[in-house]
Length: 99
Image 1 (cartoon, rainbow, N blue to C red):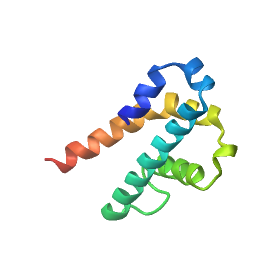
Image 2: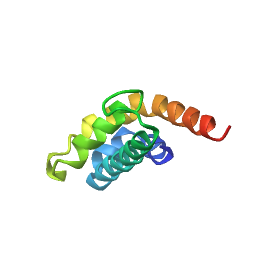
Image 3: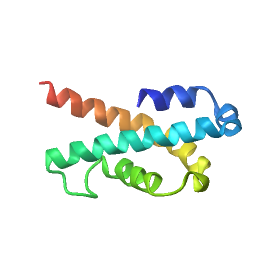
């Protein structure tokens, strides 16, 4: 999640100008979604339910399409709009697990 924040902090202009950065940000979401999918399975959360479902579904879409078809504007908007709230959810889960 912090890697997503760091890339977003670089700004939209930098992101738009770099195919490598666009792909790297998409890969961050694939990695995040994979970890959340694994956690959801272990926690017994039904597929498609709970606060992690949108990030997992986004991961599935990104992971199963070719890089040439990457919708960079969707990756950017998701990162700006959804990452902060997802980070709060993940931090709350971690806090619950460490209590």
